[in-house]
Image (cartoon, rainbow, N blue to C red; front, side, top):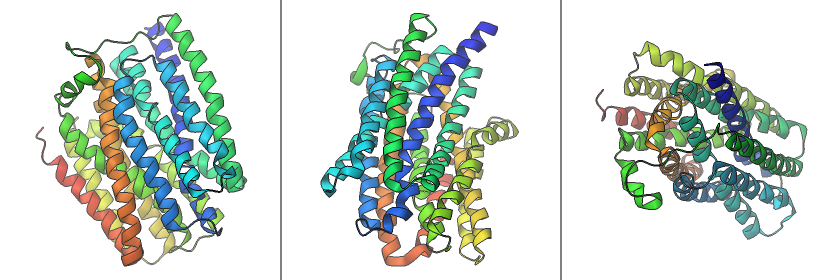
Length: 392
């Protein structure tokens, strides 16, 4: 038992650290948006395009790399992903041509899409389910603390230096993760499971859609990703503009929000037991609370109360997300399709996030921030309605 726990700690430790770095990278643009908008080089529309390109490439990459992640060794996937996503950040500030800057975010999106599937596969297949669930909770914790570190870098360094520092961190982590995962493979601590079924690789995609409750979780995942990516993307700008906080303080406040949200996976595990392991019922309540938070914002003028409501809305939506990523995904460990299932769920989510990010920018231009807040509340209500389609 002690050996099993130690192995789970080793696998979880390297996976969580690598995933933390990936979430540092993917939140850089969001926390730097207030600074970049103060230059003459960028507008909300141009930054929204960077984000949308990243989302689109990341989503398509998740579909491809999720399936590949069930075939190729995790150490190769993680090393390549961190290098492909880190190098573009190093050179982004050096490029003057807008097309090349867009290309940087395309490469970053594809590189980051190579990470989560293989990491979750390693955890789910090589640790007992109770330890896999804990590791996935900590993986989600890393996803929420990534923006915290991004916000700290944004406070300490000029925006160009933040891009460069993030690129260096990613490349360094690529070599560290490769060495550790290679060692764990040699010690037979990591032993990949073969996919169940006769067909392999891309020919086995249809079998993923036949996994228990997979379809309903795919639609729920879209709502979750819109909240965690698209809505969160605009929060620093909302804090800076309508709420009137200075741009450097908006980064700090966003870090506080990220810190609070980081505990959502732990809260979700606790609430899951209170809801008697009824996943759909719990997610329905969480989405409704998020919708209520955004709705009340429309009637509150005090900016500090609005900050509290933002935290409530984002945290409750994150609790719904934790059910999918920390409870549902680890339960698929014996199928041998964890990476592929994760890839499809993430792909669907980021397709929705990419589309919504452009929609949000358009709504902002036409109806202002109140229109955006109303839209956010409607999205959460749709999430609650989707959970009603699955009986428990």
